[in-house]
Image 1 (cartoon, one colour):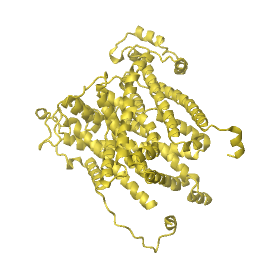
Image 2 (tube, chains in turn blue, cyan):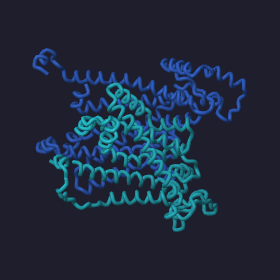
Image 3 (cartoon, chains in turn brown, red):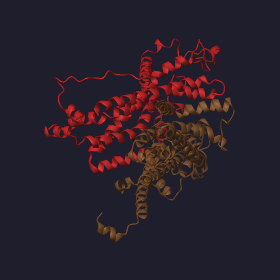
Image 4 (cartoon, chains in turn red, blue):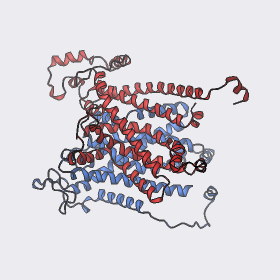
Length: 330
Length: 287
């Protein structure tokens, strides 16, 4: 930048930064809409290619035993007699207006099912993510760069927890804390007590993954000259770690969190099945098995939208924590 | 300095090698993986009873001398079942990783070499695949093609492909302007030969480690899908299927789910530790 432009524009660094972040968010949102369209299309055709007549799925699955007249009537009612391309166009048209159709298996508007089931899953994934980060920060900030046996012990714990499959962990927790010690209810989705075991089962493997990269970068950071500077200014060890080193060290962990949200949602399907929790995951599992096309697409869209949004947030958070990245990004 | 040394022919120079020191972790990991491979090829070496033999009066034996890992609801020996399950789990893990890598190589090459438009297209495709949580993709896939080992492998492979593809693309971009590629071009080699002989081997080298760890992850994924009832059919000795069957009895027979899960954990742990050791050795030598 030349001195002339500096004088002319009188840049307000904070505002410029926000404007840049906003532009980037807008672009990402636009890309996100395209992604959602692709997800809807992919799901639509995947489920149409599925063996089995969708009309039978509407009329109660294999046990329904409908007559020829009801089949013909339902086929007309749901527009299944039109060519596939027309059905797709009609479906997309309704989708744009926010109409996700009626669930075949539950005979309720998909939007209502989604509204009911989204919160428990959001609650579960957010709690797990927060819990995972608390574990990561506690474990890495306190043990990185300490005596050798301390950090190798912590490192072992991280590797071990990253290797734990959440469904096995879920079963173990269920066996020990729900059936053995009877501390928590084994199933259900009401109240914080039902949330404890499922979110621990999801958080521990995730914490293992994030802690591995955070420890590595924290150990590198603690060797940096600016850490030495901070120490010579008389800051306590804890202050150096939390105020100075951490901001640098969390960056890889933050970018991993974007990936983690996808993993958490996949994990939520299994965990919700194990703990018989209400939620999008279990609903999706049932919807796919019942060939419930509108509900499956609806859940896929909500999940993909959540993932896209979360990744935009993670992206912005990353730029906010590390302003150096903005020059490359903009 | 070290680069110079690597580029000059080594004939006549005796390279002094430090004797390899095996640390405990990698040693245990590699031994366990070796054990799994032997168990996959020759399960009868370790397990003496039939994994499918039903002995009703032996049902729900806790772990003990006669049955190391106990017995399940039909009196089948869990140790035998876990050992016999090794073959299927390892096969699924390897096949799924191989499939994921093949897809990733095609996408990565297209993105890395195909020019700006193709690269953007591949990037967008990857973005879509990422936004689709892999389990949803797998559920849809199994719903369309039915459950079983084949669809299970494809579903697991598809779930892993976008992550690998991103790495391959990055590697291809990093390698494609290297000196040896230029010189191969100058020698007039056809592009396909350059891709196969120069580009891929060099681009893939850092990915060996990721692949080693990927097999463990693929085993976990496949068993999660089997656990949901999308993989091997119930009486078959497969780790995920065993877990899903044992789930009905966790309140009073913990060993039904504990031991198959323990083997899944030990396998992932071993691939992670072995992979990391490999990484250290490769980096140590290449640096």
